[in-house]
Image: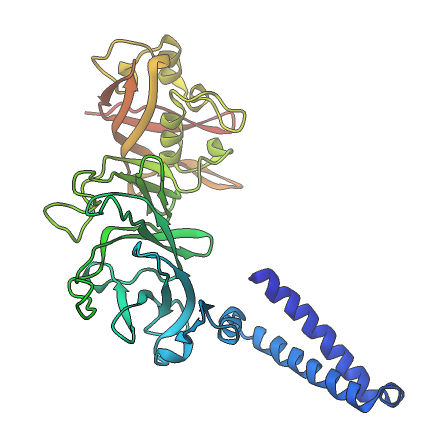
Amino acid sequence: MADGNVALVALGLAGFTGLMVIIFFPGVRAAMGQMLLGTILTLLAILVVVTMLLAIPGYSIEPLLRKMALVQTDNQVVDFYALLPERYRVQSVEYMDTDGDGQQEWVVFYQFDLADGRSPYAGAIYDSDRGNPPVLFPYQLLPPDRDYLSDGFAYLVPEDVTTVGEQKEKPVNELLVYGQADSTITDLTVFRHTPNTFEWEVPRDDPRRYQPIGVFRGDGGVIYDPVTKHITTTNRVYDRSQMAVQTVYALDEGRGTYMSISDPKQPGAPISQKVAFSFGMPGDILDTPYPEKIVLGFYESLGRPQSQSYPSAREFLTGAALIEYDRGNLAFFGFGGVDGKLSDISEVKVTELQYAPQVEEFTASVTAQGQQPRFLIAAGAFRALVHGTPVSADRVDWVTTMVNGKWRIDRHTHQE
């Protein structure tokens, strides 16, 4: 829609220029017929108004276009923009079959608690399959504790996530409601259709007809894998070094939900968790002054094919660490009691990474880049596959050292 807005702005500016020419040049006006002149002036005035609207910060032409062209299918027309009170700002209306009855319903996303900044999104599915004449009844898409769906743009994608609770002759897709802020998907709520009344009963939404079976939020992103049905959340908790905790959740196939059996309002225990770079490992990682990034980069490079874009695991090391790496000493890097070599390691996950900037040490000299820091960091709770067998690594303490203009790491020896 952004491209359309740009095009309309350009067209509006062109229209404004034409309007000025007509107003200030009598010869042009005389050469045009009165009817043609009136038509052109009207169109140009409309273009000027649209241009002025688009100049308002945060204004989008899409709701206006949607109001002008209402959702219309099978001779059914519902103006949800006028139907909902002003305190609910309708943002989108889609028309799809959400309950597997062969008839399409209206999926409406709207904002509430309106403010100048981001306002939360909520959603409802309007169905007209009951009553004579039919009643247009709203079924809420409501997360636990009346939480909101997103504070960015919200949209729905049907997916076949689970068959629990479905009739074999009447399969129904689950509804994945995504929330997107800028270009990042930050929210994902999974709803399952659960019939709550018989066909001859009046419609009601207690218990909920669309029940949440998965609620996830990640400021660094949320990803659904349609093959494994795993959902991965990324949450930034290491602000200064742009690192995050990446958590993977699996569907409980027997129960048909991602939620905990002990607390249905919370996701169940994750199947894996690790520290990761929020935006991928930077190509110039050895230039970073943050030692925790270098330690994470080293362990991510272990067991991974060498890439021209990133340093090899060996390039992160100096001193005794470099010597022991060339020897293939697993114990030196935390994998004590495990037979094998470093080349036997794969799928390394850093499940905990600690650092203490408050005890940083500085060199005595001051350079053009300022005081050169020397951090002591503690990295622990590593997991990996060695010969395909899962193992956990012992805690290893590291210290960073500048070598030939690049930061490297070596084992830190504790002073008694």
